[in-house]
Image (cartoon, rainbow, N blue to C red; front, top):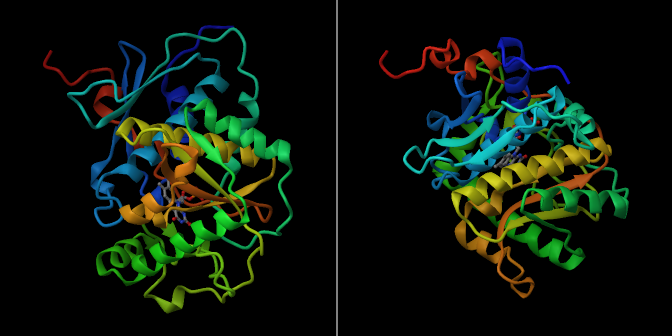
Length: 336
Ligand SMILES: Cc1cc2nc3c(=O)[nH]c(=O)nc-3n(C[C@H](O)[C@H](O)[C@H](O)COP(=O)(O)O)c2cc1C
């Protein structure tokens, strides 16, 4: 395999893949900095796009950045590197969420890398109704394996537990749409015109469930003009629950890696997904989402899976806008 250059072209490819990751309210709370002398790409938190009402602890911000790190790893492998990822490598620098060292090439591509890389560009949140066709067991097994590869667990609850989790989500949704801070914050991230390339465009929203069974997030809660007519959703939703053993910032980053690994694997098999995060934003509802008889677990996410249209891309900041310019010129930021 020829030597790889970590030049502007490669950097642009890597960062473009990273920013295609999902992020809460499409806040894209990341920026990147190359240390050319060590071939390390730093992944940093963009705290200016935090969500104080929905995410006071920064848990969802870590998950979002973790998803970007997964894409970065997949893209690096696709380009021929053997990337070394470290999460929260410097306790004195808590905004440095991850580093990806790119100084080794890989003699062989890891199996599945190409499919996952292609899926980065085709994965979108799909908030419209699914067909209701069941997902084959071997595909679901693949999703469970993808989560496990990132040290997380993907559970596939039965009908009764699914109904209970959706009821918790519905309660969270009621709170989100009536809590003034929450609903103002989420509404502020909905974009209806030609606006900055973050936030969710109205066209990417979906309808509400006519039967009220599936509590999809009502981002447009107090702006009736943005509502689509209600629609009938799948009668037996396939919900997956992503959990971790512990609940530290490192586990939140791992959740992001696992979430994106599961979503890309689903995309490879034509399975669409949307995310139900509402119950995670209220501590007692998140706590109630556990299944205590399965042992200690921290619930991080509900994912709705199924078949339907591919969904529409949402805008992203360009790679150049999220790359720290000074370091990328190779000047470092310590005095010469
Ligand atoms: C931590 C986190 C929480 C999210 N919560 C929700 C949610 O509750 N409902 C929803 O429809 N989308 C949710 N999303 C999806 C984002 O809105 C979506 O990723 C973003 O708008 C970019 O769109 P894309 O996924 O189509 O690229 C969440 C994403 C993340 C990473």
